[in-house]
Length: 282
Image 1: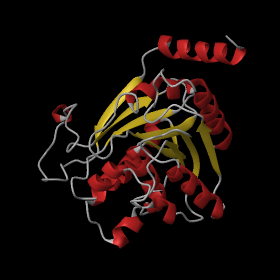
Image 2: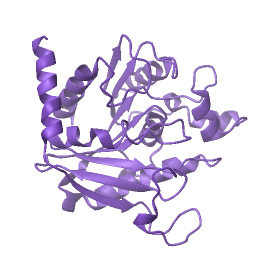
Image 3: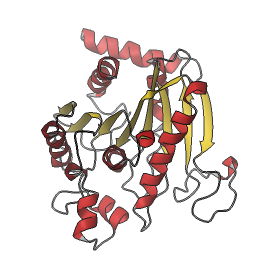
Image 4: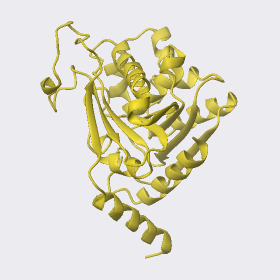
């Protein structure tokens, strides 16, 4: 075992032995936006991703002011809320970063729903920033796969300064709705089987980058068979073309959907590289 692997093993062991985090659970909306009926937190069902959007906030013992809101993947048809959600909480908290898991509603024919939930999550984190030890100018959005599409959508479609992320972190993201290289399931679930060209382009986030898009950290596997690597590459190129700071990390293999799973052999590398980026760039 080389020195880098030893350091990674030590870091993982520290995560497993770390003390329990302070956890806050909060519904995104006072009323269920689907039917305006009152909703209680205990109404959230683990296998129902179509209603009751909420955030789970994991607060570090020694906060450094930074916060990350995580959007799990699942093709806009379900949420991989474990290995692309809650499982990463301790690792971020160990760095002093507040970690927020977003349970967003699935679109089911309404493409505005996930973005609306992501914007509301950003509002709530900033509204509670003082109480949670967060600097409201250091709140980022993160996402994996279709959650990466949602994260990059917020980064390129935010409606106000209040909902603009300060940075974005993308795991093997879906970026485009271009049928030649999108992820078909995510596309159909978000914008339907026969969207207009205008709608397709609107949610092709590589086309929506501007100089005001927040800086980005992007990672993927070169052999991703589910989401073509062109998604990440074209988004990265668009960021650079608009003079937005961006970092792209492509690992030789590993496929798709690894998240925080130990089965991904480059786990130590992405953890080390993301930790460095968050420490130096944010």
